[in-house]
Amino acid sequence: MTFTAGLPRLLLLSLLALLLAACGRFGKDDPLETLPVEALYAEAKESLENGNLPKAERYYKRLIARFPFGPYTEQSQIELAYVYYRNRQSEEATSAVGRFIRTYPTHPSIEYAYYLRGLINFDRERSAFSRIAGLDMTRRDQGAPRQAFNDFAELIQRYPNGRYAADARQRMIYLRNQMARYEINVATYYLKRRAYVGAVNRAQYILENYPQSEFTGDAVAVMAESYRQLGQTTLEADARRVLELNHPNHAYFQGGWPREQAKWKQLIPFMGETRG
Image (tube, rainbow, N blue to C red; front, side, top):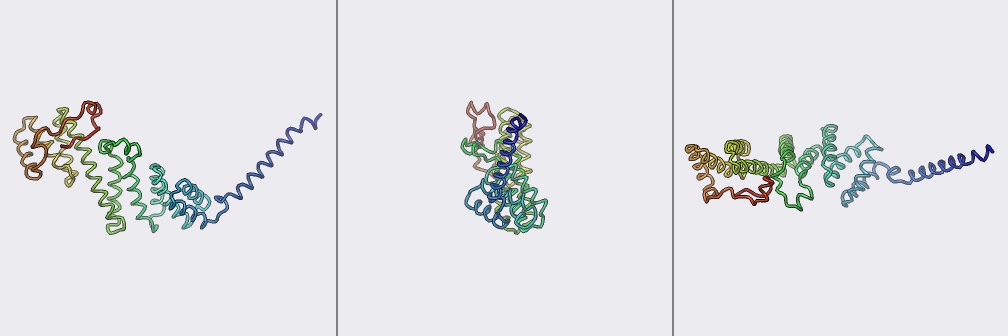
């Protein structure tokens, strides 16, 4: 009676032992657990170069876990950050590259790490949905572009003649225009809502902070129109004079600037175009 009652328990223990043995054999056959560090890195690198990002991520992460120190681990950390970036995992990429910069400030790839940090923020808001829908990115929050601008500025400050400096400068020009355009969108929105003081303030902000952007003419036009509506004839004349001198063909002089938005766009004021 006792032997019969204990039989199910004995069978259960035997089954668990077999399962543990099978798991042990499987673990020993798993290349992630058996490959030496050099081979593990080579597999990860090859997967990255071939565009197999999921495999590259798995191998880099396992290498770092199994071998927490050494040159292969250090390089794997920055390459894993790039894998996250390529896979549009912005938060993971930012965390990984920030950790690399803090941990290895003298690493041979440190310049690239600063550059990659800028790229991550540069592309953060460029989601697949935004590209498909054709959304105007300058009508969204500019936190990521502003951070990218600062990232590239720090890169250039640290490595003014470095490998990535020229590209960083071009991206900063683009970002400066994007941020200026965002401010113009806000300024013209205020203008159309007859918030003329707010429009003037935004326009002045553009001229003070983005003096070399493509939108300085629009900023002066906003000021001229706002002063006209406010009855400030002297200030209006000054703004028109500056606009005529620097942007003689601006659409403001043809009237109807900024052009009206479609009715549906007025329901979502920061959608669509406003430039004349």
